[in-house]
Length: 142
Ligand code: RTP
Ligand code: MG
Image (cartoon, rainbow, N blue to C red):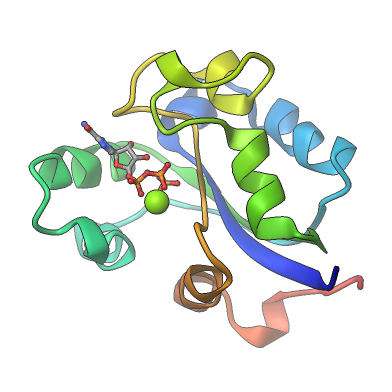
């Protein structure tokens, strides 16, 4: 299995709950390396660009409102099978349906405020990383 990179967000609810470190620890314990990271507060324009695939969905405005409600941590995670591994660590989109021991089960209650984002494919990961990081901000350790 080749080394992969994925894009991850600790969303405003999790930053507000003061669990950035606990979530980072989940990544590291699973073998993912944090190779880029920063704290940002999204504008509505940038949140809309990031979630462009959902622009026509009924929850889009609420999603943008939530993602701009406070600072977030954005990071690039690197490791074997990083995209799928991170999605496994996160759990289902709706925390009420997320498996025990996943990040969303442990740190979130509502689908509209579900603690973390993770890219859903290597192609999405490349697009999303490019929205937030330039090449000289990523420190690959593979
Ligand atoms: P994400 O992109 O944030 O990692 O989440 P995901 O892949 O698990 O889910 P996705 O389908 O991409 O949806 C993006 C975010 O939109 C919110 N959502 N709300 N009210 C609803 O039914 C609903 N469905 C999705 C969630 O916050 C989800 O993370
Ligand atoms: Mg998604």
